[in-house]
Length: 167
Image: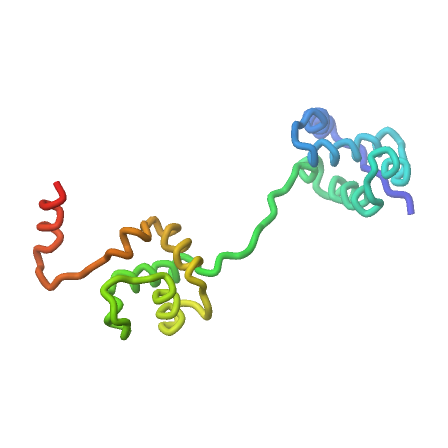
């Protein structure tokens, strides 16, 4: 089957010329495939000239034919989906603001493994590792070091007194 790049519009041709000067190797290679196809070379010739697989050349030409020059730019990999969404992260921080003794942990300080276990038990997530707990706390804009030392006091003026003594 004969596959080649469709003829570009004048604007697309300018974009192709700009992309051909890209410092990104992947973008440059994709643009080169299209330009060689536009010059009349077959997929097998392009494959041999650039040392690429048949599938890479064909996929690049198909993407260009459907999406134009913007489809040639290197795309960022989507990565793994976040384990906790924003509401779940907020619930995790709320747990962190409660003393561990509320959950049967005989300590006044939270540890990441303890917080992970409590988050699972409270239904915040199905499963979570201590490392993920730390990362999500950081993503929420909190410092684990500061949060780990979180203490509560029955004194209503605790925050005011605490601020005065640290000054």
